[in-house]
Length: 212
Image (cartoon, rainbow, N blue to C red):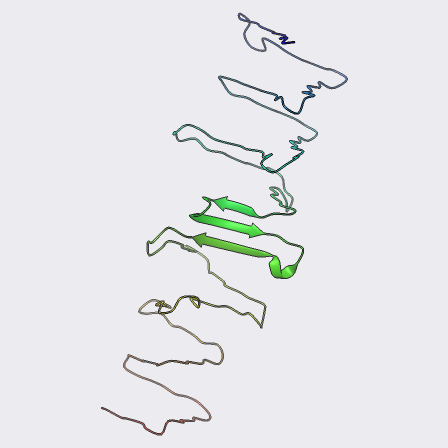
């Protein structure tokens, strides 16, 4: 049968309806898998706790999601703030699948934690933007380090697409190659001076053209 319990206070102000338990708990239970628990406020809504707060969704099938949505085309935000002092003050953890930040299929950051090292990956992708700075990493004050500890995989720059132009440094920059340098294509040097300070110099070409 359709039954409704309606609690209404249409004149009171402040805490017009107050549910308070000074010793035990307040338990709200919807004991039916096809029903929902609704909280609807025309104003704001606050949930406060002191000993901890848990929001748990015991998913039974695909699509049983937790969705947090900010609607309305206004200057409004979703803000997550933590005053904690630990190294995990804000902890976002996916124990099985990936973590996606951004618009899926456009600009996205994907974290893929995995129990197998070869499958644990991180990617930052812009599939739609075509500006010169479609992805930009910029340190205004400090430096920028790109490091790889693997001596097998190393660091690769623009190796997937043929003909990609690569520019290193400003027109007045000093570029340092700290160890060996191998050039498999042509080498063009444009400048006033070429200085070679080596112990041994080996030229394997049969033809050398000067001042052509």
